[in-house]
Length: 241
Image 1 (tube, rainbow, N blue to C red):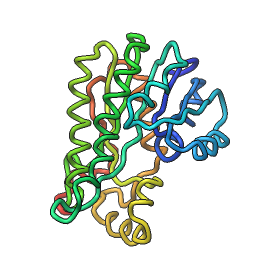
Image 2: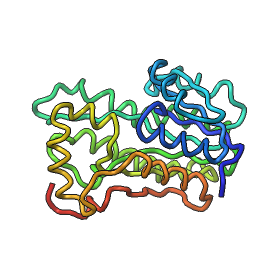
Image 3: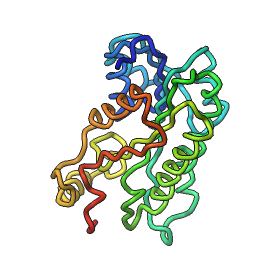
């Protein structure tokens, strides 16, 4: 299986899992567009990629902006939506407005992308979303992240039917060494990671390229549909947070 000549769009492709997915897709001969909110980050990412890659500045939470990602493309074979913030904070202690962006990016962002890209997809096309281990294993302080990623998984199952024969799947990462996680944890990153690996059976957190490999597999395998693929080192099976 190969992505040779396929047109692939990666929303949130300037860093982390999105960037690694772009790198692997380019290695298979795909034409890749990476989209994100920062032109500077996109250009930096592009300088580290080899192949036919272009950048598009866009905000996934804005429908008009999302449409602009696809306006120059007549055909899109695969889309990966890796954008989506983490809504961290306890419900009783956090202003509800602080949760809004993460939910809009994950839920409405996916909706906007689907509406823009589906008419340009062949029957063999695919859309891959990102949820997360919190959908099955919530912990205090991540309630709204749990809501967001669980909604993505529900959306995956429904869209797999509504968009058929276009395939829709989701990757569900556990703790992964990405800039997003690093930014959220800040100075507590090292201490937090040391603590969480004790509850992960493989005794380490994931690498962005490990999640990206799964995304590429979902693009290539034409018989996987409506699936949530867990890539969390077995964390969801451990009872204690």
